Length: 345
Image 1 (cartoon, rainbow, N blue to C red):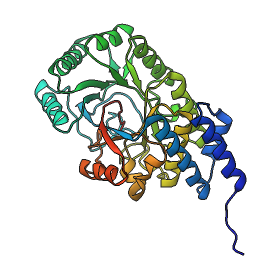
Image 2 (tube, helix red, strand yellow; image 1 turned 90 degrees about the horizontal axis):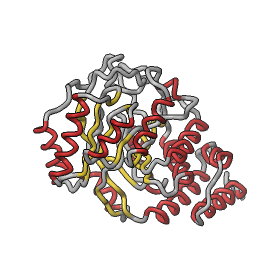
Image 3 (cartoon, rainbow, N blue to C red; image 1 turned 30 degrees about the horizontal axis):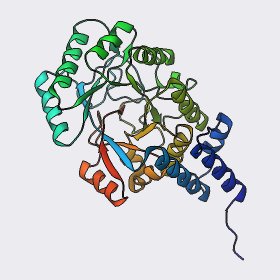
Image 4 (cartoon, helix red, strand yellow; image 1 turned 90 degrees about the vertical axis):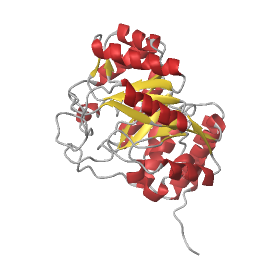
């Protein structure tokens, strides 16, 4: 008789945790870490199957799609070690100042033509303070809001002043992206020009202003599985509405250029673990998916993803939108354009 690697105990425990989440319960850190530590055997596909059930139960059959526009590129003063737009590193990423209204309106027209209901404005800089830049951003937000073509969302760096967050909300901003990137423990390995606490404070100001939170991170920067687990629980604690999951796409010239890529099954397992921990959140797969997942991209939905970033990212390319839409049709999933999700790459 042939032998297999099937582990009935592991199979049963995954099923027990999955049923608990489906019934409205939660898993704790110890249980979540056990899921993150599963090795890529047949057990992984048990995990994915339960993550898929959880996605369908809480999020239905619709997959939310989003895209972004860079309103200020390159020359950023922060030293995030994954980022091609940091002034600390020599990369081929484009550099330009805050864009004028004409190209922004063109981006809004394109978004509307593609059925995108919101447009995320992303800027490469430390953050927003009161002054001319904030005035210009608020003017853009108000114009987009009043124009009715798209809903304006944004990812504009650190916010240290409640008045800034309030002004953004008054200008029409509904959702702001500010990723925690990784666990509190690992964050100093990612960036030293600002702190994890700075990011938490930004999220606090946004929530006080009544702005929805889009916050996630990047996998594959050298963090441990425990760091990924801690990130998921941190996002739960801050009340993120949307959780973008990026996978590092190493950029030449950055300190993370030579990081070993994550194995596709490790990526899928991580997405599934996020779904177990965050059953009701919109989990969006964003930057790095085409490079890291290759032919396994379609399995992200079985792993629990309920949203997808389409079109090109900030400094890296994505596969054509038409190919993503065909992938969803092939899986029997419904595309629904939305804009609460951002990428850092």
